[in-house]
Structures are given as C-alpha cells and as structure tokens.
Length: 407
Image 1 (cartoon, rainbow, N blue to C red):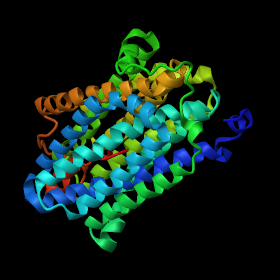
Image 2: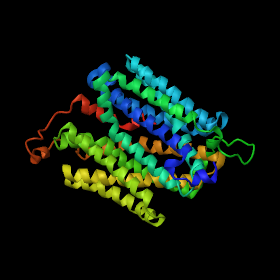
Image 3: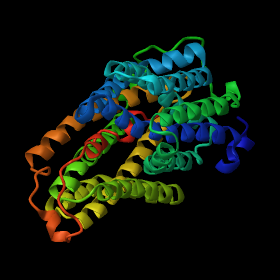
Image 4: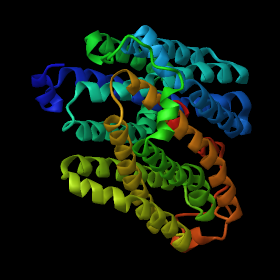
C-alpha cells in the first residue's frame, strides 16, 4: 500500500472501504440469521427453543476457543484474502443449509461449520486492517468498525422483521447467504498482496506463537484484561436484561428491545467520539471506562427501575466500546508482519474463553440476586405496563444476541 493511499481519508481509501463493507454486509446478514434461528428453533421444538439456542451459543464459544488459534497458520498457508473469501463462501452455503433444516441435530452441525468460518474470518480480517491504513488512521478505522458492528446489532432485528414479513423467517437465511456472497465479491476486489503479511524471513510462524506472545508481552496481557472487563459487563447485559425487564419490572417486549438498543447506541456514540478526540483524551476515556461499567451495574442493581436501567446500559455500552477499541490498538501496536494474524487469532480465542466463563457466572449471580423474580415493580410504572409471563419469543431473545452467528 502506497504512502499516498495510507494518507488518504478513510472514506477514499479503496482497500479499507472494500474490507470494511465486506465485514459490514456480512454482519447485517448475520443479524438476520440470529432472529431466524430463534424462530427455526421454536418451530422445531416449541417451548424448548431457548435450550437449543443456548447449546448453539455454547458451540460458538467452543469452536472459536479451540479453532481460532489456527487462523494464523491457515492464513500463512493459503493467503489471508483467500481464507476470508473461502470463509464467506462456506458460510453462505451453511446459512442456505439452515433454510432446509428440519431437525435439531442439523442446527448443531451447521452451527459448528458456521462458527468455524467466523473463527477464521474475524481475526484475519482484524489483523489485515493495521497493514492497510496508517498508524494515525487506525483508531478511526477501529471506531468505524465498532460503529458498524453495533449499528448492525441494533438494526438487524428490525430488518429481519421486514424480511420475515415479506418472505418468512426461512427467507432470512437466504438473505444472509446473499450477504456472504456480496462480502466475498468485495474481498475478491482487494489486491491480494495488500492484505498479505510482509515476511522478514522464510520461516513459518509457530502455531503457539500468538498464544505465547499474549502472555509474555505486557501490552498484550493488558489487552486480555480489557477483554475480560468487557465480557463481565457484557455478559450481565446479555443474560440478565430480558428477565430483569420482563419479569422483575413486568414490562413488555418493546421495553426489552429499547433497553438493548440503548446499550448499542451508547457503544456507537462512544466509538464516534473516541475517533475524533486527541490521544490524551482517549487515554482518559480508557481510564474512566472500567469504573463506568461498575457504576452501570450498580445503577441497575440499586435502583431496579426502567429509566435508570436505560441510562446504565447506555453507559455500559459506551465503556465497552472504548475498551474494545483500545484493546485492538494494543494488538496492532505490539505485533507486526507475519505474526500479526497469529496474535489476533490468539486474542480472539482467549477473549471468547472469557465470555465462556462470564456467561454462566452472570446467569448464576442474577438468579441468586433475584433479578428474575417478580416483585411487582412494573405496576409502579403505570397500568400500561402489566406484568406478563415470559413468552417463547422473549425466551429465545435471551440467546438470540448477535454473538450467536455474528461474523
């Protein structure tokens, strides 16, 4: 990549734009499949849909933890661009397979292959970005990625509703397949050598290099600590919100949707601000983020009302977004050349292992603290919010976060 290209604004940076939109389009498609998967599980097993989706989420964690460390080796063997294109094509076939699925075991098999594609695509994509933009552009590139991810999470369910109205929920899988094909086409337009690591010698990087570097280098250990902080708060938001809103507060489905939207909007706003402020201000934002996440959890726990919950989740989303961007900055600044894909892959694996621990921890603690028990707080907010029993839709929403099938 020429210096002129790296110095151009990101919106005029051809290679970055192709990579960016390839990722965005596949994220939107994954949002469609998240909703459709919940409805497919309900069609197959009825009220046990949440259990099916819970197993699907566990499959994602296991596949990513054990398969992501191989991403760097595979990218070295076949080339980063080829692996990303291949991952998109495989995932296009997998989501098309969901269209024809008529038993639970088929969902589980397809989920393994789908998340294997994500385990390879995501770290290789993230590792490619520092090589195609300048050091000065990188924080803004990360912010754009965070905004795209969170916006896709917010808009995905709404878009899925439109597709369902037009062609049924199985049609969402077809739409997702198309998005992966478009993503592959955009990546095909990226010059191959631009996204390939620059080798300093003829030796291949050892398989365990990324994992070892994550623990040996202090900045990389710091990135893992930031990821763990994000997973602790994020797990509480994703696991506890549906029961807290619908059972504890006795509100309806739209109230739950707005609470989760506030979480995403906070992340989008923080990423946009982070990209525009000075490096010194970014450091201050990072320093304030962990206390802000703790404050968000305390607000939700102490007040146990809907309005404070909206503010708390906005704050939590903002803090998580900032820590996520800083973690990626640390990865880029402390890796180079052929080792970068290995380090990003190791971080992707280890950070998801953290989510594998914090998901059940959040579920246990929220149950122990009684956040899922109805104490009629919802009645205090007015007669328009009558307590409801949890429907199959809300049970499935508990597990239909973008993390089920996101890129």
